Amino acid sequence: MTEEDLMRFAVGYQLPNDDGSFVDIVRDYREHIAEVFFPWLNFATGRASIAERNGEVDWHAQKDIEEDIVALKGLGIKLDLLINGNCFGRQSMSVHLENQVRSTLEYLNELTGGIEIVTTASPAVAHILKKHFSAVEVRASVNMRIGTVKGMQYMAKLFDSFHVQREYNRDLARIEELKAWADANGKKLIMLANSGCMNFCSGQTFHDNCVAHESEIADTVNMKDFRMHACWNYLAADEANRVSVLQNSWVRPEDIDHYERYFDVVKLATRMHQHPRLVIQAYADRKYHGNLLDLCEPGFSPAFAPYVIDNDKFPKEWFARTTSCDKECHRCDYCGNVLEAVLIKAG
Image (cartoon, rainbow, N blue to C red; front, side, top):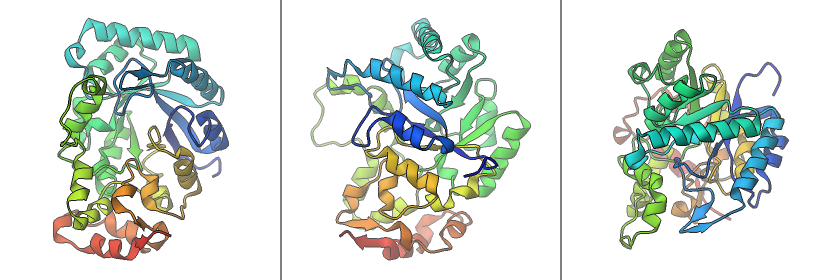
């Protein structure tokens, strides 16, 4: 990548895992990374808590996060605080929430020298940020599913940048339209490149609400014969449903440069990924030799085992074909034919 290249990545922070320190990963790929998005311990976000599982708290987590975000800031990385839970319950538009957001930002600004971005799915949180922190870029979460000019217009006074609804990643005409409006109105667009989530998932709102209330749900006696993940249930129901994974929103590393004209920053989901270095390296290198499922979050590799999707076997016309089709997948067999070509037995 040269200085003339504009596209950089926003990557999701996690505490050290088998890949080592996240700060070390970012340092190794510093020229490719513009931002790191991270949760804070007392806020619901779009993923599970970074420091608590079923009442077991990692009491060192706050100290570790603080040290890491200060180190990331020292590398010249922009910091993006996540307050993107889908629900804050009875506190959703409360003075309590306002005080919580304000005091947290004040603390983090003092700690780091300044948080540049806050990503939220809450118009109330956006209002609080605009009221108290005018210098912060307020970013609309991908979970808001904003994929139209109308959707951006409704929230234009509250948000400075918008994650494009991921279902439209392969609709270049729509992205062109969104980009034209954003440029004309001083807004920015962000794309999430490696979501494994099912397009137009009818279970997303339910799932997002469950995640926002995860700590309460974990302390409740729940049904043992119900799984909240619509995607896993769907894939388990019939092997014929596997083709839906090819019809989702992810973009292969080999195709990411097609989006450079639209996005200065592309988000990579790595917060919960078992191997964040693998994902970052693949997109930084613009190529990946392996199981495509391993790049996505969620990846669905267990649902396909003992088979994998060989990224090297995709046809040359894959990007052109899937970004120009009518997206009426139930009337088309193209992705089904591609799946037959790319699905191989592991080993």
